[in-house]
Structure formats: C-alpha cells, structure tokens
Length: 339
Image (cartoon, rainbow, N blue to C red; front, side, top):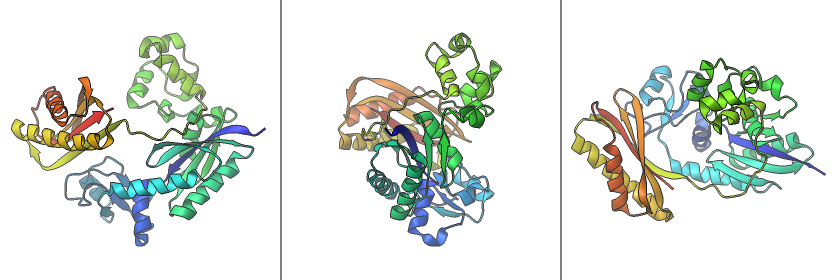
C-alpha cells in the first residue's frame, strides 16, 4: 500500500515572477515590485527577484532604500488581480494530480499524496506548473507538514528536497532555532536567555522549564517543533482569508490628528466595502500606524457584536486609533478587519 506523504509547493519569487512572465525581456534582471513602481515615492518592496536580492533588496524594505542598494533595478507597480489570477492557474494545475490540495496563500500550498515515489511526484508537479504557467516552484517533501514546509527552503530555487525523521537530525540539529517554522525573532531571543540557541538544544530542553517560560501549551510545543513532530493531515478546505485590510503610505507625513482620523475613516470605509462583498461579519478591528522615521505599531479591539455595518467599522477603527499616542509624524496608516 502506498505511503502517505506531504508535499509543500512554494512558488519562487512569485510576484516578481508573474511580472517577468508578462514581460519576458526582464528575465534575469533585478526586478523590484512595490507601491506604484516609483522608487522616489514612499512605499515598500512587495517582492524582489533573486537577481535583486543579491544586492540586499528584501520584502518590506522601503523602495528608496532598494534603489540605493540596486540602482539598476527595474521597479514595477503591484497588480494584485494579476497575482490572484496566476495563483488560481497554478492551483488548477495542482488539482489535476491525484492529491489533496490545501491552499495556504497566493504562492504556496500543501499536497497530500499516497505514493511510493514522492520525489518523482514532486518533480512532476514542478514540471507541470512550469509548463502550464511559466512559473517556477520549489517542492518540499516530508512525512509531515512541518518537515515538508522546511524542506522547500532547501529545494530553492526550482528544486525538490526530502526531509523526514531519517535525515532530520543531520539537516536541522545544528541550525538556529529560528530555522523552525513557527519560531520567530522574539521567541528566539527568549530561548537564548535560557541558553537554547540551536534546534538540537531545544529538542533536549526540559518541558517544565519551557512551560514556565512560554506557558504550558507553547513551551512544550516549541520542543516538539525541534523534534520535527507535526500533523500529517492535508485538507482540501478552500483557503479563506482571515482578514481584509487596506493601508496607505503618505508622500508627506501626517501631523494633524484631524487628518489622521479622516484617513482612518477612509481606510475603514474601503475595508467595509471588501467586507460587504464577502458577507462575513467582522469580529475584530485593528489599526496599523507607521511613525517617522520607520517605527510600526498595531493596536486592535474586539467588537461588542460581530458586524458588517460600515459605520460600526469606521467608529471602531477610530476608537482603536485613540489607543495610540500620536507624538510623531505618521507616514503610513492601515485598517484591518478580522473575521
């Protein structure tokens, strides 16, 4: 009987790659996608091609800094509808295989497969995506979701990598704990305070000590990650966004509170339109503020009752904005509705 395998498919440099497919003359050039494509304006990098990353350009970086690091880069505006269409095309290809497809986002998903040769299947998937869409993907193969997700990193770009309990220690043990899916900078720093810096050290850590530091659920969970333990199930439930958000970067900083409130209301109104189109009630509203020069903070609040009412969402966004101390100029505002 064929064994159960989990494959993680991750589209390489997805947004930039979609733009290159539309403009083949850009292939191999440093391409940076973000904002309206004008590096003289305030906006951040959505995605940089691998050629641009060689110059230190990264997602989330201000476009102006990206231009300093890579003056010869081609800067392009973002085009979300094009990326949604390309993503849909890729997942249509994946669903042609005898696998369960679970969508994680525009550019990645899990496949659940019963096969005796998962590496061959991974290569077939990669080749089919390339042939049908012109996009490259990397495929991680694992005996659970965690290992498949991490394996993809070692397959990039456009490759296949196998990570299972048999080679887990060899591949992962001496890496930093932030190499694990689910452990970020804050947890890494807190683990370092306990003298835990590598995956091997975390796997050998005491559950009681971890529970005292991170809580009875999360502490032991982090140790299980270090052991490579995770769920194997892949579900075909369609990807459903957990939130809808809108944000604006201002070319001139906002300093007047009335201007700030007016922009918050305008953003909340746009989010309300998105919410109305979906018809799902909002449970929580968040406001994101980026202060000059580049400090970002987010505050949120749970609504008294779930709602799709635009006025209620606007009022809630203003109330959350009141949680900030606007003592510095504001360069970006965002409003997010969470379902």
